[in-house]
Image 1: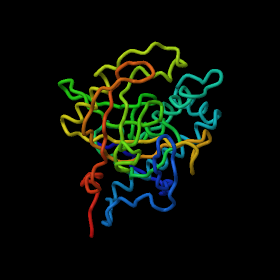
Image 2 (image 1 turned 135 degrees about the horizontal axis):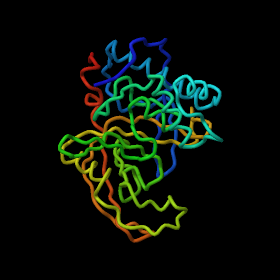
Image 3 (image 1 turned 90 degrees about the vertical axis):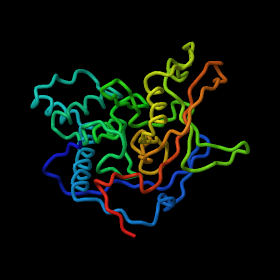
Length: 290
């Protein structure tokens, strides 16, 4: 199920996040309390899990070097018979190219798309770029917020979502503005976003297709979904001032349609609730001790 290279390199730890508390679209940091909601049980991962984590660590270092070095990208392209890089390569095109180069080098990890936890990844692990989520198997789409998987009979489920702030996604609040729980939030469905097109696009109602249908199926079939959030202007951010943090496995507990105030069109909303600590990691990779 999980693809990893046979010769892991020297392990280097991932950056770990402080706890981020959501207040509307603002983020506040509370030092040293990131794992305050975790159980007191210690999770001991298997040797294979740590080997995969070392492979992930190496893949991330290679990704960041290739992103910054055109000469290195050109050398890899030449050695593997890939088309040369023409003109200035930046933005999404750059990240996709780096991803292709790493794939040609055999650096991608966890290459089989799957529902549930991903080997070698812990809650709180941080990533600089969306492309890094792809090469480690956490979220397999460079651009879309909802990544999906299909069964043989065509039924689709969401494997992961990235809450990047491009849609109206919020932490669950009471009528008085208090947060119901740090482990609950509302995710807005995909499609018909006014942010794209400079706000000039005439919006239509969102449809229960694609990623929206997949999230509904997750609720019906009780399938977990991985949640990754983008944080802006906080510690350990990349040179663009943001980072992505893996938040863990969540359940979709309900969904509904509501009218978007600015356009009077319908959008889908999904309530997600974080799963219990003992459900976050597959038993294949862990052992529990009191």
